[in-house]
Length: 325
Image (cartoon, rainbow, N blue to C red; front, side, top):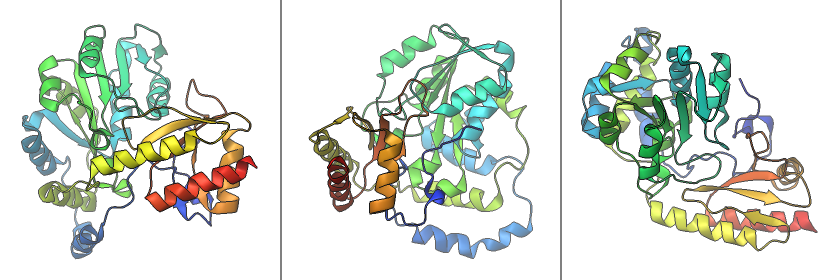
């Protein structure tokens, strides 16, 4: 497993503002917490061997067949499952910079990375850049690879057009990855799902372990889908605040930010390393940012910011100005 996933809050004791995790943190989870408290007795019995009941609900929501949906223990679980299942293909292409787990999973299962790899991995919206690849470009990529895996974990954090599960199924060689972690802001539950043609789902199921989804997570997933309320109540306003923060940081001498179509973005600091800025902010201000230097293709000067409340965003800008003095 790679070192340096985004939210390393566990390493610090004094963090008051967390800009490191891309997940929206303003969600009220009290109703879910109360529901799970009422369901604690389910831990006395085995859950479903596979999450069939939740898959049926997701399929209905997506307008596809239940045999075109597979629930996994988070999107990362699906990434390793896909790499394992198609390991005999031998080669892969990974559009960089991007989430490091594609590269790590392919390394574990012996793939060689090349420009015309059999499997192609795309994060869309991309982490860490916030770039959204147009749908027509996604479809064009699918014509040049035997299998295209599109990780849409941040699909609820953008207003840009994306490939739908039904469209992906019709293509025949596209797997979409979805994250309930991101959609409902519940990272501790480890819930995700794959949508793909039935033949691909069947092949993945043949490699998957039973009881991968624990009973409480399964109940939570069904409750969340039934309720139908996503984490971000006002996405346009949230994305507008992202642009306000990005432009404010851009006005600081020595800081450059990249445009984004999501709630997070990359920035570059010229006169120090991202690690030095990160440790200063944590130590002096209780602010945590993401040192992005471990993304393939980025440098020790890259860091990533995820938008928080307007007051917290202003505090970050002030703190980085102080670092410059």
